[in-house]
Length: 214
Image (tube, rainbow, N blue to C red; front, side, top):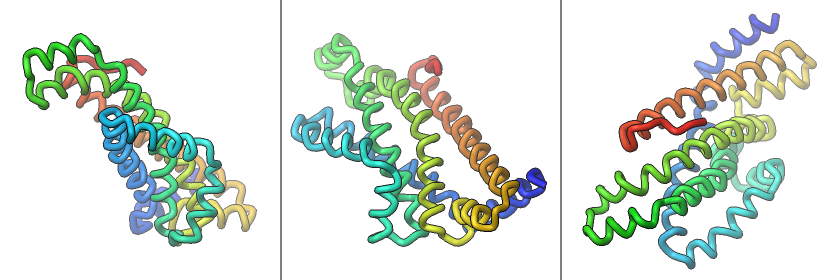
């Protein structure tokens, strides 16, 4: 029964107007903004001083509080995008900042002495330092992204979403369906994490010539 429900859930997931993709959109937006903000914080001390307490506040605030507060301004269909974004942002921001700080100062000094262009500096110094830390951060952030995104859907209840299906299974006391949808979420989370990290490893290999260890 659970297997049949899981298969039905997978079929429904394929035709749900892309609502589950909103969680992935939140992850992508969080990754982009985290890199931009981390670079700004590394470049300007004022930006670092401004962003540090904001990121700490986002990390310390419970997911449920964010969801309830966001419902005041955001409609349910977009709630999972915002919540996924907020949960991913501080994790990847911290990872990128760690990577930037780990850059070899001697190599940086050499790039200044030889006046290497920005593209060469990125390839020779910054990307090899940042990508391994960014990979580790993504491994953590992807799991958080799916859990927080589905939690937002359970509260926001956008029609056809995974969270909506979980909520309906709860109110109808359909234990088998509840476990089946949970299994679907685990598969989606693990599958996307493997694919994304594989792609990131390919990029890292092209830049540094080696794959970072898990």
